[in-house]
Length: 116
Length: 116
View (tube, rainbow over the protein chains, first blue to last red):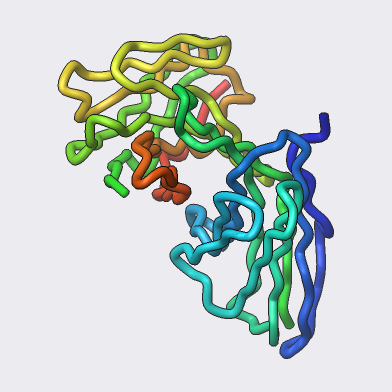
């Protein structure tokens, strides 16, 4: 049981380049999330998904896109990278808070992205 | 999402108990109280959650006020490995039209420093 796996762990991009951060989970969780964390700050929600084919914006979605074609995978696409997107990105997954479940989140180890 | 308020930082000595407070005066009856912690250079990890009653697990205890407007995370004997940022978050358990809420908002958290 690997939990939540993110790739790559580190990446340097030039301004204007595009890339996809991969996230996969093997816990059959319905919900998946992408957060970013700037140095010394808390986590900010970029996008989330409550199931395959369903995604919604979080606090800071501009400059990003997501898709959820399967339960397991939730890739985050950065189009036209900008220095402001330099951050650590965390993917997480959870069950919904129904049927008595509290919906605790399980996080990946993070992807550190630098845009120069 | 209902908001939580935590002190920016706290300090403790090793082997001593630590009480981390959280105020959530606008909590609704269906909100779970979740605690997560983030060790340096790692993703957040789930610590404990509760709804109305006090809770214990192998990592910590959670004491919830009778009116549920505040809670306290208790680390019974702090170790150096407990030095982290601790986040108190409210997680809505209410289904709305059959769709559970997906968003989870992290605040700034409390930076816990543990002295040898």
